[in-house]
Image 1 (cartoon, rainbow, N blue to C red):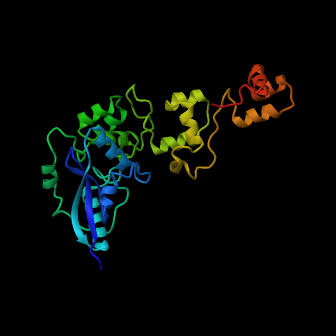
Image 2: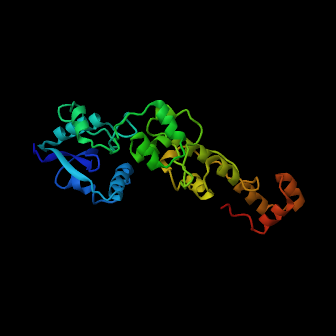
Image 3: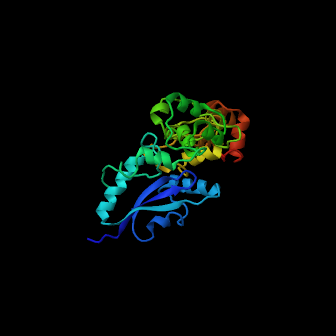
Length: 287
């Protein structure tokens, strides 16, 4: 059996802590830094982007090499379990999506003491534990993400994941209110259950704007499955968006109908001029 594999970590130079653990051979470890956007692991790509935004560059640390493939898989899982994954394990710091190979114990390599020594004063500590009260405070806060990150000593990505009910979901899952956002924020961090509600609900553009603080472009992208496809798959037909209290199906029926304007206005409970405009194709586009 060839011993050509190694286990590596991608390191955030600002904290000297890993944000991704992997197993590979040859140039695999460095490929993450050159491949561009990883559609299968966007969180890792976001982490790299954020580090570079701070004018730094992630580093590669080969933790153990000259390993058989199965041994490398086993060790990979040990490290992932030790550090934990963001949004999966409480206080996890890794962006890994899967648990890796097969388990074990890596306390001799990454003890709490060694993790403490790697951190630097003044740097956000992604392993910081938040109380339930703090999580709720973050969820409802309208402060900027950067300010919250500094106040609670956690990464900016974790602030977003709390508001999206990914991290600390056990605390926020029963909250039905939308998260608080700073006035400068263009879009609310939507949780999975909120996205599903938007997909299934029907209502007017005003209703969606007031309820979810989203423009109709974002609403249609969700309902037509141009965004958040995996979250809405299997939910069936999306709820209609009503304009003038009419669904797109109603508009098509009115357009094709031979009935009088008065009768159609009464039937659909809208003004006769609305019926006239539909007949003239002036209100058939629901954008």
